[in-house]
Amino acid sequence: MQYSLPIFAFTAALAFVVVLVFAPQTPAAYADPIAVGGAAAHPAPQSMTVIGPVSQPGARDNYTVTRKIIPVAPPVAPAKGKLGPAVPASEAQQIAYEMVQARGWGDDEFSCLVALWNKESHWSTTAGNQSSGAYGIPQALPGSKMASAGADWETSAATQITWGLGYIGGRYQTPCNAWGHSQSTGWY
Image (cartoon, one colour):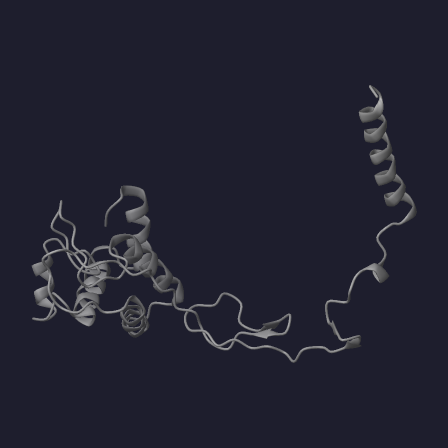
């Protein structure tokens, strides 16, 4: 009785070794991932339509990239005390993408802008920083500075983005320069 556990353990280990040596994994032991019902049924090539920057457009593994991807920031609750409808982040980013392209900046600059404003406001037109007073998508300080771009600066994504791109262009020349400054200092 005292030797039953060691004998069982030895027998189990030996059984595993025997199975591995005498019954190796063979292709016949596994189902063909493409076979359906015993007949080879190769799926039709798949395609996916996306918007925004793509590093390597083309086709691979039955996937075809036909458009660019625009990253979408997660939704953020509006700041307390601010009125007006919040514009969805995807809509604000589409407006910004068109403005970035109009300025002659490429997709790489747009990616930097997305990263910068994701960090600052998550693309919320009503984002407010209670400690500094910064406001909106670009986190203008004070927010009323954006009135130079339009009277609807408190709620308009287009007005805030226009002002923010002007600020970035004037102070940092490009969104990537602004993003680099933000990463090194914590602000832009």
